[in-house]
Image (cartoon, rainbow, N blue to C red; front, side):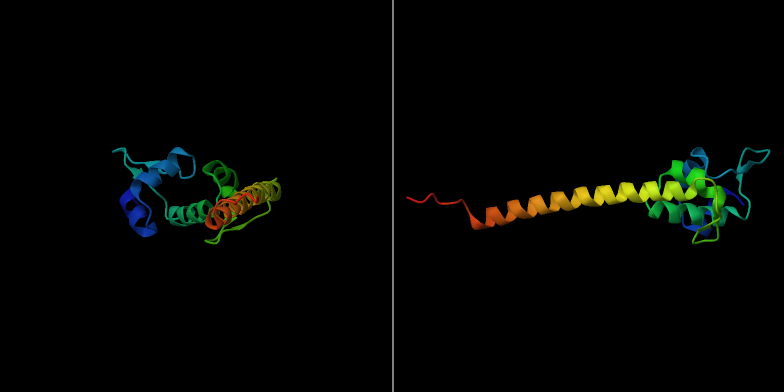
Length: 123
């Protein structure tokens, strides 16, 4: 199938499909005319890519683990270091969540202090 059909079947724009190719996530064949030709399984691959991006993984991470992906969810075959990579990403997310919670708490304190107004010194 050509890029336009893959775009229609997946709901992903042609520019993103070309980006996925540049990132090594999709590998279309080239016709004699130079047009990209995607195999039927490219629909599943794009669905997997979209799901993994929504999970917050980078295209570099996805390139590493895509060969282990099965199905649209996707589920994963046990591949070398896959669990370690997922755990490392979870630790990174937990650290970012903690930092955001601290920032939220600090802003909440500033908001409360501002709403109360300036402290009046006692005489």
